[in-house]
Length: 342
Image (cartoon, rainbow, N blue to C red):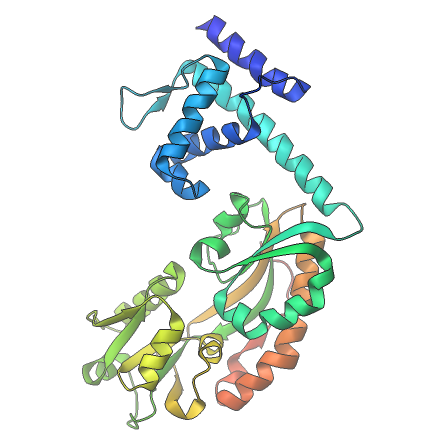
């Protein structure tokens, strides 16, 4: 067992010394570490956006390169062998050092970055994103903008799938992430314009109109569901859509009502006469949008993005909200004086 560990350690040390076996690559180590972290190859494949077969082949290739067995496959899920534990420690040091070097080279230069990967909340991208990017286009030669729950969550930073995110993720901010607030907006009721009655509580509203759900953003879904339950409402699932735009159009078409935010309604492009926007009955509920990056890597860039985002909200977005829903816009708060979130 000690001989196996020595062989593996020597191979890994050779990688850092510049003379690795031809079949040993940094990518194999990254895949191996993902399997260790996620505990199964299926979960690692989902994180890395690979097939399960590709992950399995990578682990096998690493075992062949090191000439050791890394996992005990006689149990489910597979567990690290003693040698595998040693390799894991060395691999983590190598991959961490390589990522640190990569980030230092990308962020330390005075010129443009070769690539900047941003996870941007869909409602922000559609309402403020174009203006923000047009003013920051000289930051990078190439931009990759992704939206959706996975691309804009804190894990996207921790797993190095994004360099900067603009998000409403309410996951507690870990020490290795720096978060800077942009704005805070209220959740509101959106009901068909044809429904002119007074809305005193959502339980009575739900007895008259169907509740329309949207289910791609887990954070939004959880918060809205908690609000409905606290109001004593168990809304049956009759209409559910992946996109918020589809939900707003269903409301405008008279199919039912929903809970959303001003940015979501603005993004949809639905005419203001088609939807009534009302304050949420009961305790107020809000979401905060932040710019976040890995601490010590992209702080200056995140600060530039935040400053430009705030300026865009003030000059472009707030005036549109004032026309669309003047009675709600006063609750839309730009957080330009607040310090970093801890």
